[in-house]
Length: 158
Image (tube, rainbow, N blue to C red; front, side, top):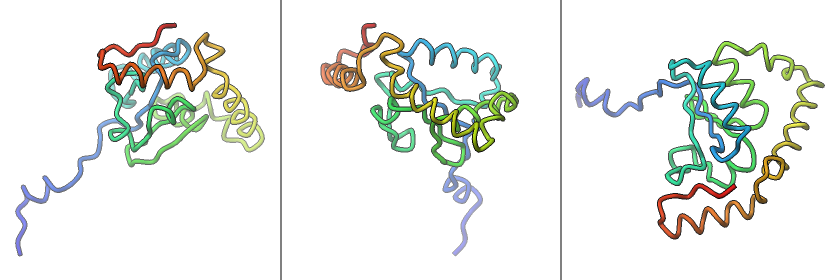
């Protein structure tokens, strides 16, 4: 059996042009500040693919099965080879890809890394309240209601 070059190339999955896909909460003012900073550092190179989980069209299927509720619980990213990473490791990898790895390099040290992870856990648990938003359960209920209403505009009131 012979396979043509055209058949072979159409059957291969193409590797994405980005190195890491960053899932972020577009409703979070501090998250948006960080994303805007990273967008400037990416400078159109498209090393980082930014995915707003607050977008009503967000799809878990297109993002390695990471649903909205899971993504809201803590920061997630997906590498170009499909690895899912979370927490401080996301920041470390994104900054490394953008050539600024030195900023998070200290988090690779065992003790300092553990402290950074612990601090991030606290932030992840309280970030909604610290940024003046409702509890996660309320945000999810409101989003589900909005999506059920098919209003097409699911940005939550702040």
